[in-house]
Length: 468
Image (cartoon, rainbow, N blue to C red; front, side):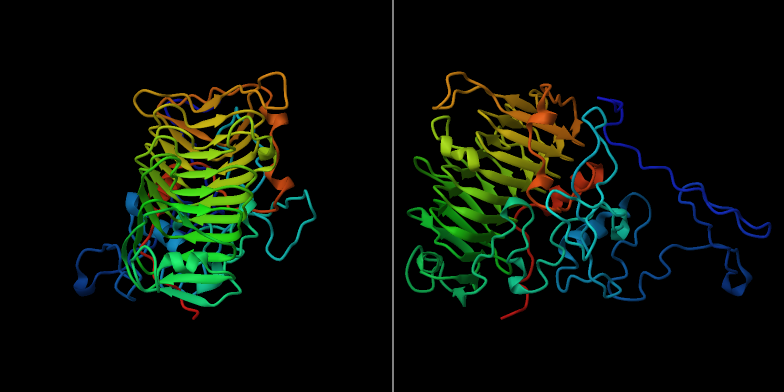
């Protein structure tokens, strides 16, 4: 790796030189390229001094992002994610806008490239093209996060996913269904809504635990929207079987018990799925399994914890139909889970801006014919296991020789002794995401990105947006 081990994150670029100062102008600060304020005379003829935060009490939210020093980004990072939650506006009333990144030009020998440049607003590039104008600066100087407009109205989630699940519209064209009961089944329950024919946008008028006795099967064209409440599914998980256009947002799922019980099971032959801002933990099998011909799935802003086999993409070497699987995983927090972040067989997986720490076996595995594009993720090893990428040779049912998949790592940060363990050849063997979609929101790996993903992945206490 080209970066120094003593500093795993890149230093910020030096500021541009300040314009020449006139002879009577104040000197320029070497830290930020700005001229300090001239002193204001103190009232009553006392000492001349400048006090901080003179504008902090001018308006209600003027405190946001106003801190000086090391705490200067904390509030603004939250604001980037939630868009000030209530109306997604910055203090001046203008909408926060995401940047969209894409192809990384740096090789793995330069693990900290500059932030990717977004696609131009209003431009629809041709297939396989990816324009690169200047990135939009974020308020407070922190990372620019995705989905700044997703909480503006209730149904703004529809079609808003980045990556392979970008076409998922859920229950956009259906009526609103209000969950009024935390029972496993019956009138006003989540199960009643999920098995109904036709599109539904499902919201919750109650908070609490739903104890599931059997898998909760979700049919096509459903949005399960947990914003505005805190709903936890226990005992079993969600099953997305032979369905299309499903969005699951802002739920907690844990404690799934029984053979082959995952928190969210996507199989067989399901497509156009978006799992966003969910907290998943402690199930007997996996947390998310995407197998048996399911494809075009995005998993974003989720938190995974207290688990062993976290995410599986592709069932086993006998299921050659999984060669068509395509999955995007971004801005997720894998918090001490042991392995499979994810493990991929046959399919294509695009991983970007995730934070994976303290794994117990490996971070990401490439099994038979897998193609893994890993961009600008943070991999932080624990005390014992340091290997990030693992290659697992397996023999496909229609092949004579066993082979592993491929990994291409671009812009990833490897912390606390994490070792990429990459095999030569991945650059050419792995797909390019821009061949499949034109834009996505991606920042360079940095301490600020690590901080905001920890803070904002998983279930969040966001209000239900207006719209119904």
